[in-house]
Length: 204
Image (cartoon, rainbow, N blue to C red; front, side):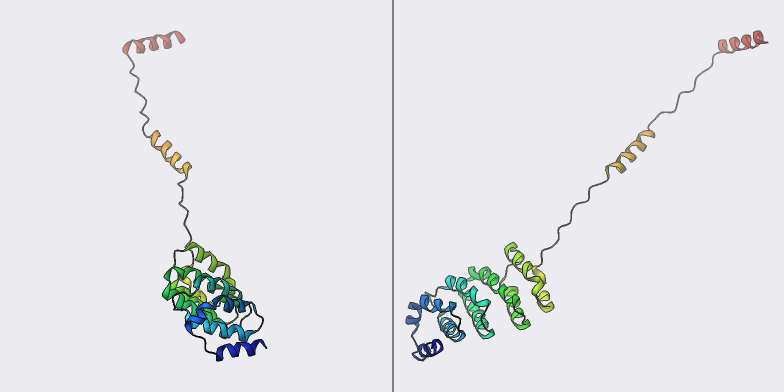
C-alpha cells in the first residue's frame, strides 16, 4: 500500500508551491522501510532543491539515515540534491562533503568515486575536520579513491633536531686547550752555577 500511495502522490503532479509546503511530511518518509516511497519523495525534493524556501539544512541532516539502507538509485538522487545545494548555498560545502563520506562504507567503487570527486571539487583541503573524517574512512576506501583524495592527507610535521650538547662541549674544551700559554723558560744566573759547582766538589 505504501508504494501505491507514493505512486498516487506522483500521479497528482503537485506544484512547486505545494511541494514546498509539504517538505516536513515528505522528509518524514525517510524513516520508512519501503524504498519506493523514499525514492518518490527524493525525486520530488530534487524538483524544488533550487527553489527559495527549500529546507536544505534539514534535508542534509535527515538524509544521513538514508545512506545505510537505501539502494544505489536513491543514493545517486541524494548526490544530485547535494550538487544543487552547494550550487545555491556555498557555505554548505563542508557539511555536504562530510555527509557524503558515508558512501565510503558502500562496497561500490563507482559510488565511492562519486563521493571522492565531490569532496575533491568542493572540499577545503586545509579543513582539519574534513581531514579527520576522511582519515576514519580510509580502511574502507578503494585504491582509486585514495588517489583522488591524496591532497586531503595531513602532512606529517618534522620535529626539529636539537644539536648534541656533548659534541659542542668537546669542541669547546679543545678550543680552550689551544689557548694555554707555553710555560715560561726559567733563566739560570751565574751565581746559581757557582753554588752548583761548589756542591759537586763537597760531594766528592
